[in-house]
Length: 377
Ligand code: NAD
Ligand code: 13P
Image (cartoon, rainbow, N blue to C red; front, side, top):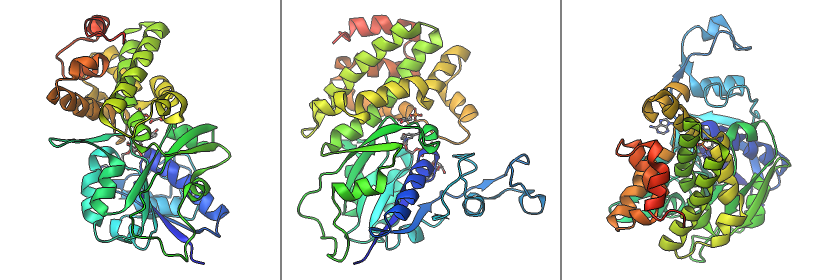
């Protein structure tokens, strides 16, 4: 019997936290998986701070390649500082070598980079590889809207499912308890995985992702799972606006209530396979909305933007140290998709968030915008 080789494409805050989970489980289930997990790193030079415990002036007095630092220190010092990574994670700056011979591919990069990455590895992966996308975002083009699981699957001629949940990366990396949702529903027409490998089914994905502190729920609704993660980023910006105004918990609860209804309405309107209960019952729905509106980066940057009266992009550059917001771009993409179909007014909260971000509306007018747009739903 052969074992699956696992590669993760991405090594940001969430990419590194997920790599840690994968590496723990490939070791624990070495009958199913090869222990080594290759992690593709978008290479950059990084100056290790002189107060880091491992700082050695003979080696670290000048900027060093991030991938080399990760392999030396077993820590992603830039994107997940302070968290020891299992030594079976191998950081690899070459995307082609990272995905070589991997039968299980985990995609975990900010959504704006996915298409280019797929172009780089198209034709260079195993034809029977299977994938999971941990990306929170949607792909919008003049042709319409696509889930990243579908973009990845289409571009690489493989099948890709989706993982999404109430998963603030730093908390998961510290092994604080949480839940997640994985959706996997492959068609029967794929290049078969050779029989020597363990079957790729719900049980196998659970063996790869489930931890005592990271509880996995397996479902079939890939559209609902992906959309929950993408759209809540827009709503979390709205929640950040409320906190920035100092309007308190009632205002934020209103945004969350309207937000989950708009998310579900969007899913049911535009994706045939989407199920209502994914939004109301799964971690990738209501739970992710709650955690993101409390402690996420989109919420934090939107709050600071209102408090300081400065554009959110400036705050993002200043406080996130290279991490990327997903909600600002998703708000724009969703707005353009909706307005092209004459539907923007049916989603007054998501529309208001985008129009505030581009300076066409003011945060203090949100109550009016929700009311006049029929946003009480
Ligand atoms: P991040 O925002 O922490 O880091 C940015 C990453 O992008 C870095 O790895 C950086 O090297 C990389 N990058 C920068 N420029 C690039 C380029 N031109 N091409 C390719 N890569 C480039 O990333 P993250 O938090 O790991 O986010 C990945 C996905 O996970 C996002 O869709 C996000 O919404 C989702 N997510 C994040 C969290 C979280 O708490 N961080 C939790 C759940 C899901
Ligand atoms: P942010 O990107 O807003 O930090 O959200 C993180 C997240 O997706 C938590 O589930």
